[in-house]
Each structure stands twice: as C-alpha cells, then as structure tokens.
Image (cartoon, rainbow, N blue to C red; front, side, top):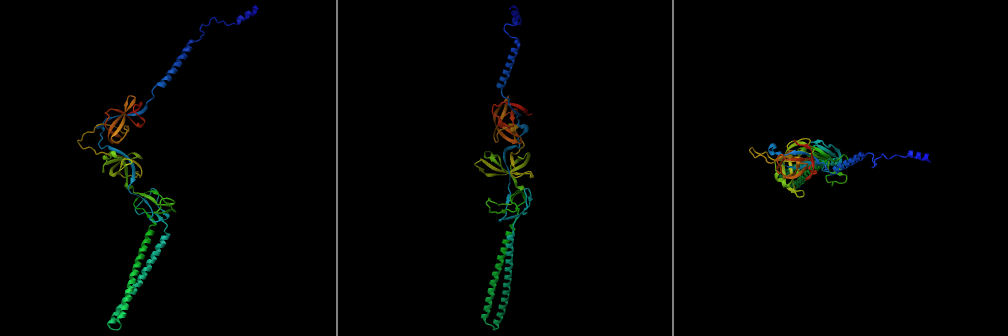
Length: 413
C-alpha cells in the first residue's frame, strides 16, 4: 500500500507556483480591447462623417468692363432649318410609272424630267386627234373649191341675165347655191378648229405623262418606283402614290424659331443674329431676322420668327435643329460702359431677364437669383445679384440645390 501511494504522489501536478488569478498573459487582453475600440471608432467615423461633396468646377465673376457685352446676344431661341420653297413633284394624271430618273440627293434643274408614265393609250388618242384634224382640213379644202366654183357660176349668170339669155330666177338659184356652200365652208373651218383644239388637248395629256421638276433644287425624298400607280387624286391610302419625289430649293433655306411672347420686343426685322446648328455646335453662321410673324401661338405663348442665313453652305440641311442668338447693336462711341459682371453661360440657370446661380460658400453652395443682361457666345452678362470676384459653380446645375455640399474639382483661372 505504501508503494502504491508513493507512486500516486509522484503523478500529481504541483500547482503551488501558479498565480492566484489564473492569468497567463494579461497584456494580450489589453491588446484585444484596444483593437476592438479602434474598430468601433472607425465604424462610428464612417457612419457619422458627412458625405463627400459633389465635384464641381468653379468660375469667378469678372467686371463687365473687362469683357464688354456690346453686340452680345439679347435672346436665344431654338428652332429648325426649313425650306421656303419645297414641293412634292407629282403627275397631273393617273398613270403607271415606267421610268424614274431621280435618287435621293441628286440635283435637278428647272423643267428637268424626273419620271415618265405609261403613254400608250394617250399616244393613240393623240394620233386619232391628229387624223381627225387632217380629215377636217380636207373637208374644208373641198368645200372651199366648191365655193370658188359657185362664185364663178354666179358671175357668169349675172352676165347672161344682163344679155337677156337667162332669167333672173336662174341667177337667184346660183346665188343660193353659193350662199349654202359658203355656210358649209364656215362649218368646215369651225370643225377644223375644233379638231385642232382636240389635238392640243391630246398633246397636253401626252405631255403630262412626262413629270418635270418645277424648279432647281435637290431631291430629298424618292417616293415612287417603276411599276407603281401615281395619282394626284389619291387620298394617300392603299397602293396608289401621290407623288414621285420631293425637291427642295437649298437656296431658300432659313431657320424658324419660336420666341417667348414675353421677350418678342427684343426681336425686330433686319436684326443681326448668329445661327448655331446642333450638328455643328462650334460653327457660328452670320444671320439676320427676315420677319416676325404677326401672330402668336396661344397654346405655347410663342411668336414665330424667320431668320435668314447670310452664308450658304452644303452642310446646312432641312429639318436640322438650330439655335439662334439675336444680337444687340454695338453701342455708339461715347456710350456708357456696360454695368454688372460677366460670367460663363454655363453658370446660369434660366433665360430671359431672370436667372439663378449657385455661389460657392465654403463647402456648400448658395442659390441666388440674378438679373440677366445680354449674352455674347459663351459669356453671360449679369446686371444685378453678383459682384466681381464672386465664385460660382458651372456645369450641370440641375443636380444642385441650395445648401448642397460640394468639393472643387476644377478651379477656373
């Protein structure tokens, strides 16, 4: 028993040297606690930190005297290029198209043949009318010979009556015959005239089978093909075409814009203007106002204005979108210097007399109403509401509202 107890005592673990709290490495607990606190701090900063501001470009208002607005734009309006002279070329008669001589984009001259219709029946009618005319001429010639013979017979009988060889009754009979032949000659000549008019009608119908361009221009639409039926009386439905194609006089191109009736007093005839096509935004085309149409559109509260190109170019095409800047006259020598400040047009919301800008105030923006003056290309004059040196946001202002946080991405010089 004693040996067994001694062996058990040798296998027992001696815990007399362990610390009373049972910890092996207390610094590890502190390290874990510090890491947890750091993570919590980062999460709180991410959650509570303000969102980053919208990146913006900043411009600075400059005095109007530095970039004058003389001759600048008083008003901008959008519209389209239109042709004052354009026509859908059609045949005057209903017929089968046998030949089309045009393509889109081809140039035509006045009276140039653009298409032909089947003329078989009309040609036959024309030949018949010509034959009837020849027959009428022959009949008139025959009656004319008879009249001449009757006139000679009356002359002879008059001499015989004077010599008492025949009675007066015989002379009266010859005169009656002559009068009848003269009436027949008049009828024959009238019939000849009617036949000639019939030939003219048939010839016109035959000419109508050839379709010609009414004026010089460019073909923009080819509407008919060989084998189709065209008719000027078609209602546009079914399989019957109403025209062969559309020709446009490119020298008659102009721009029609709708101007808000509140600002129509800024536009007048012969006023200088600049046209910019949507297809070529960097191309400024000199122009002038042709006329202000003397009526308003009550549904849109606008007035239509016609603007003429001062320069012709093949790049200008019908129905292109365009923007017109109506220019003010340059001030006379000695006139007062322009007031206000000049800002980029992209920094202004609105057109006309009133607008708004977003001023930069630290890390936020402030929306401010301003009074607008003339516009000159990319520059806009602000008459009231801004001071020289004010910083404002330019770009897509529709995304901003008063008090939004922003950060400067690009600063204008």
